Length: 166
Image (cartoon, rainbow, N blue to C red):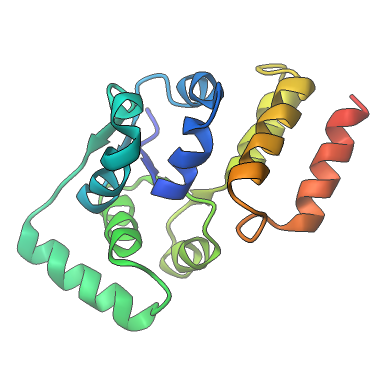
């Protein structure tokens, strides 16, 4: 069975930097899904990179609006885009890829599987899909554009050390 992958804007922005799109394409060879709010947010700056990589998954607007309101009532830290993604991933039995802790926590609370870019990079390096040098360079670019407020510093240090020893 093919995995149904939903990607948030932060996650995609990490891969849109530098040669990260090649890594994104290896992770999601058929592309990934996202919500209309995320797509609109990304399209302003990353329009060329979106083509063939992200597809908008939608559902009935009444169902969606009610679900977003309900999710945000219980998870106040979530943006409308995050609540939409959580709803879509749950509705379509998908896995949500996010580096945002509030969304990760909400996924756990709703039983929606979620993954972080660090874990994916770690797996890819361990499996030889990308080299530890490529993974390390990618992670350093991510840290340069997005300070580690979304990525746990202790885990980042542990993974970088692991890659340097490979």
